Image 1 (cartoon, one colour):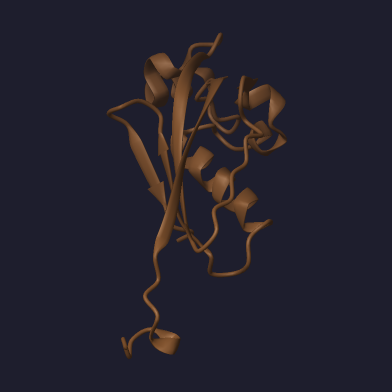
Image 2: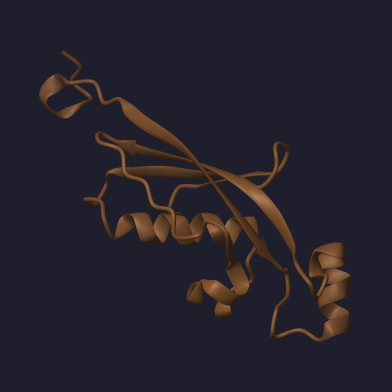
Length: 126
């Protein structure tokens, strides 16, 4: 028995990989066009750009998946991003907050979003 775990049971975590494609533009309404361009560079392109995101969701116990972002323009089609810059960090927070609505407290462990193979964000609700 493991005294550190209630009931002596080991807790496994379950991860699920999902993917979605979406476009966005990094642009803050609180900054001027020049400030946005300086801060976000080519990612501030007025026409936006797209990614094939990969998301790894890890929970304690049973798995849960959502796909409200697939083939959407994050800035135009997802109300959350009307006033939030659609960085990958904020996409991870959005996914976390939406999963929290469907899962018991303490079940969701982390959300990992791959914007590209080299750009990865991990969010643990902190």
